[in-house]
Amino acid sequence: MPFQTYRYYHRISNGDEYTHQYHRLTEEDKTINWKFRSRLRSLQIPVMYEYNINPRFDLLVGINRTMNFWKIENTTLVLYDYRRQVQDDKTLVETMTGERISEPDERISATNTNFLVGITFSPVSNIRVQLLASPGVEDHSLVDEKIRGTRYWLNIKFRP
Image 1 (tube, rainbow, N blue to C red):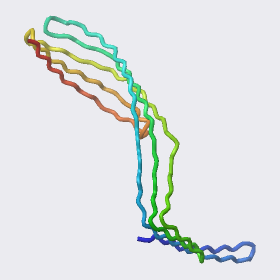
Image 2: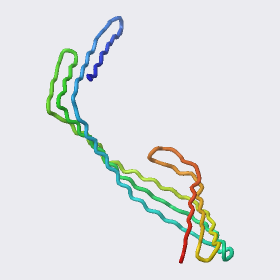
Image 3: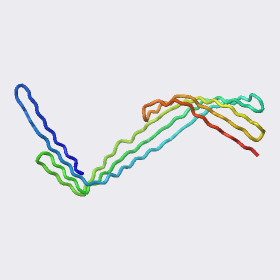
């Protein structure tokens, strides 16, 4: 489907009038190949302290520092089988041509520090049930927003 633009410009300055009309038409038959690549590197440093309340219960407190690094590559290749552009009274027709649009590589990093608290219960010597919670706020630099909430983990260990 062709894309058409009609523009009209009228200006009055110091009593002089100026009027101009623009006409632009673009007809294209094209294929777009978009290549997006993202690489993530992550470093996580947890520090935990486990306190033995009694033989059946343990209390766990910790802090977790996470650093994420992204490298994003973005390239678009547009292959035109046919393209006709009309601007006012000038016409340009191109066949079997293309355009490559490359954006500079983007590097993004985000660092989070989370607090952890948990409890471990051992009903018998060979079974341990652990519940961890991590309340907090995370800043996401990719989407420029804060996410609030608490994450929970349930871990059950069976030992022979």
